[in-house]
Amino acid sequence: MMKNKVTIPKLKLKKQRGQKITMLTAYDYLTARLLDEAGIDILLVGDSLGMVLLGYENTLPVTMDEMLHHTKAVAKAASHALVVGDMPFMSFHTSISDTIHNAGRFIKEAGATAVKLEWITDAAQKTKALVDTGIPVMGHIGLTPQLVHQMGGFKVQGREERQAERLVDEAGRMQDAGAFAIVLEGMPAQVASNITQALTIPTIGIGAGIHCDGQVLVTTDLLGQNPGKAPKFVKEYTNLQKQILSAVGEFKHEVEAGEFPSKEYWYE
Image (cartoon, rainbow, N blue to C red; front, side, top):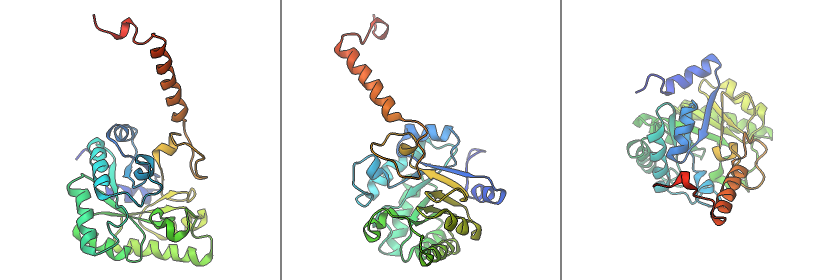
């Protein structure tokens, strides 16, 4: 293991020292290599790849085979970052045995260091079973995309006092079960702050305000690659969509005009 390799104990130490944690999604080798070189702490192979790469309407159709395929590519590129594989819908919703089997494939076959579980009724029980087996688990509470139909859409969670109390309880249960970190998605900043202060493990926010121990974004959102309006919590640090359209348009023009390839780009 490389000396500067991010590990779970190092992430916990960052929280203790008040150092922020960075996490971004990655789905392919080339992107993962760049994010790793930039020093990102955690690469999440999110089931968001279903919407970003595969054209699905939501994350629900994503399969284990699709997740393992992309996780394997990302893991090959990560010499610094910790790689987390996202457990897709129905990969941990049945038995504990199925959960352990599917999570184990992320570690054994794809090369991930840990898996992420979105909150369901028995998420804490299954987290404990995985941790007892030796598989590190990152939790995920709040706006959980795999429950999009149950929630009636992608809606902010925890605005009502009862909801907020439930989120605090879920976070505590995931910590008690052995999760090493928890993603807090789509909740009021004050609720996320309360959870972060109550836990000894790191929280990673997305649409959850500034007071989490770290932040995560979908990389294609950060790079401005997605069409349409970005969610409120997304900051586009550049706009690759415009740059790509410009570059491809220039290529098309030069080919059609007989300008490319010029002599400097061919062999004698």
